[in-house]
Amino acid sequence: MNDKTPAYDHLEPYRVALKLEEDGKAFFVEAAKKTTSKFARQTFEFLAAEEDRHIATIRDFFASVTRGDESQLVDVGESDAEEKLVSFNETLARLEKADQPIGSDREAYEFAIKFENGAEEFYEEKLAEATHPRVKKFYKWLIAEEKMHARLLKSCLKFVDDPAEWFRMHR
Image 1 (cartoon, rainbow, N blue to C red):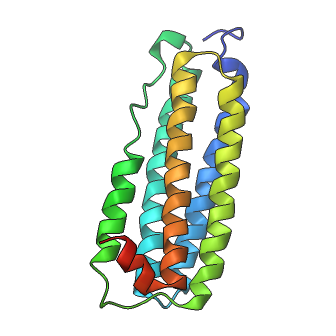
Image 2 (cartoon, rainbow, N blue to C red):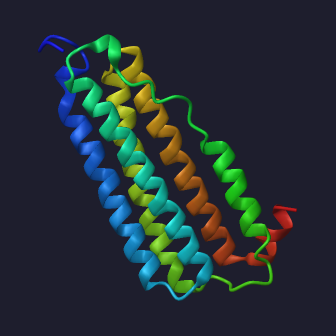
């Protein structure tokens, strides 16, 4: 790719995106270790695995940008974020009699929501700047993933605050 192509001109955002996802993974791994709630631990482990997937996708996309042929940019495909959110909530609904999250999980969820929202804002900004269709698709994919994570975490907060109401709403 020559120095004039739209994707190559914007390498720094890919580096920042990679760092955001790596920092998110580190947070989720640490949060999973610290929580005493099985539910919260499973949630944070799920999100850490999601970040691993994002890291791999960003690395693949970044590599395709730096190879030099814009026509060969990786196609990230469509996000399956909605399906994962539904699946997560279905799994959560089966835990009605299981270990319930505790109030201290609330702080971790709130921090994680802020982190996910910040990443989403960054990706929205980069999407607005993008001109290449695959670069736009890449950022749209990341945005969909981050939105799903925030919605998942907000669902966890509702579960922490009022499990009975959460179960009533998800039946």
